[in-house]
Image (cartoon, rainbow, N blue to C red; front, side, top):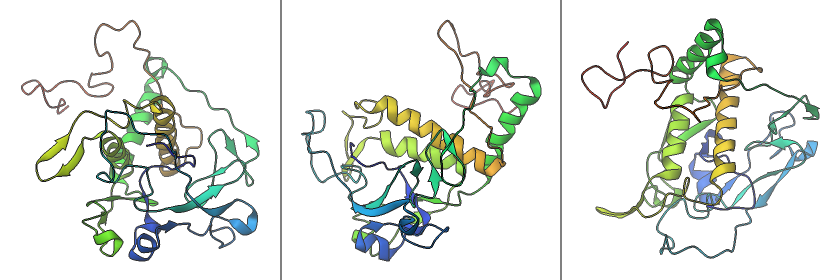
Length: 257
């Protein structure tokens, strides 16, 4: 799933419609000037996606069977290409690490060990996660069918989803098995975790999740804490105080506490 132009992974709400899918174009206007990709303000332009021409490896001996191949070209072949420090599906945001009206101000945030947070800081982090579970994503929707099931775009199949579950879905969508039709499934490749772009993809995934939580919490200084598990002998954060302990009777569930 290598492309030479950035893509955030799921479907911008403004492009989840028949017109955008049939045109295979997702170049929404930026609210600041009303032009596609903020072109009038020199933020970006609507361009054809440049795909990698590298051959596929033997782990995936198919072509044209998975909507994720050459993402997102099955759905859109023209998207916003942002200039400078601008990013986003309409070039309306700043690249990670930048802020300000023109995205020229460097912004450094400190990411901390979860076990070094105060009780109030830890509780705020968990409260933000609960908030994300209960607030619908303003900008993104998820697909509930394949491109073929959408009749090549004439019958859009999308649904709303919470900010938290959006990222659960994105992680699943990138890494799930390939559905070959009927009951046939290809399990020999994980596009997310077994591809050369795993490390930068996962870093971008977490940064985007972090930014969406910053938005809904109105907290620009929020950062996702990390767990340093190098010397851990068990899951130290798998407790009711942190990420949830194990259910007392069902090992497949989290504790109800």
